[in-house]
Length: 204
Length: 204
DNA sequence: ATCTATAATGACTGACCGGTCAGTTTCTGG
DNA sequence: CCAGAAACTGACCGGTCAGTCATTATAGAT
Image 1 (tube, rainbow over the protein chains, first blue to last red):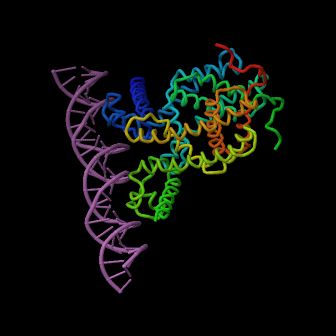
Image 2 (cartoon, rainbow over the protein chains, first blue to last red; image 1 turned 30 degrees about the vertical axis):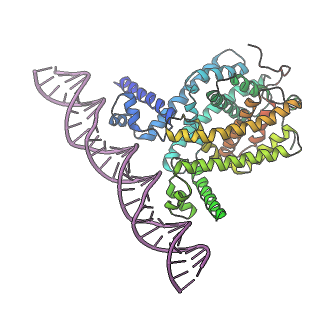
Image 3 (cartoon, each protein chain N blue to C red; image 1 turned 90 degrees about the vertical axis):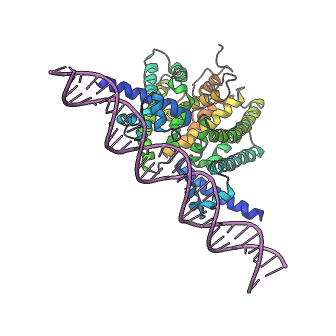
């Protein structure tokens, strides 16, 4: 039965998610993932080739959901700005809301020195690029419709993701004032009081 | 001789920096740090209590430099906006330029589940907060002088650091167009084309 | 009820690595 | 030149954990 197997795999991924977001990849043991899923260690190896494969499967699963959320927001009949706002809150209340997810994806920062890291990078990076592209698409649309300034869409996408990340982390640290809106607002309006006449960042 | 000892310690930190930014904390072995510094493993333990202590010493050292750079920029007779711009480029050409540094500090994202992680967090977080405070100070000054809008200084600081991080990572990935200026420009001007009349993000 | 195939188990192994410490080398000052 | 101190060394130990596989349990077919 194919579905039964898929369900089992998913259950393992969920267990892995719980452990990895709590402890990080390197401090996660396969045995704990197994126990958390209610199976023995050997069973994990029936569904995943090795430990890195669990991580890769996990990232695939998470980013798939993140991308699905983007697609969903893009389908709504709203302005690009509203799209970005709603994506922000959709993510913030979904899987991406776990700050551990950010740490999870942070592995991308490490230089790829050995075989395992190369494998990680090879799988994670294309997904991240795909996400950036999707967001850049929203930005581009906003520019064409005149809602956004003619900025570099990719940079704006990178900035958007950073803002989201920043929001998650700071919210995690102090659940005080609503910094989420504050950070979103900064993304939209910038920090400067005036001098908004130009398009490019001065010349030279 | 006290200085001799300090020098040795510094040499070890530099070796640790090289290895850790390349491989990340968990894949770094004490033995490799020792070899990279040209000493035997045992020697490392004359200067650091254990492996976590190396990491903590490293973070202290790096953030000390980052803070010193802020202080230096703050001392210059320039506008808050220029301060932020010059800090950006000072960092980008200094120790912070290594993308591995960002990965290094990313450990802070992991939840503190065990004693070692708690130790990490206890040391790293205050430093990060200190940095955020310093930048928030610049922002506050800019608001008082009317150069910046009346935003929440802390949020702006968090956003600034995120922007820097984003810049580093994307520059590392594609040395194509100058995304640095692009991202800085976004931080200052935001993305919206107009509707700049208000101060707060709507009401609600 | 019995047989077979498929799934699951967990004890075991080998590699790795943090930390130790008895032994060795280097330094210092008399 | 020597003796004692201080610095350094690296073989060794113990614990951990990824991955294996012989054995056992389960499900489905007849």
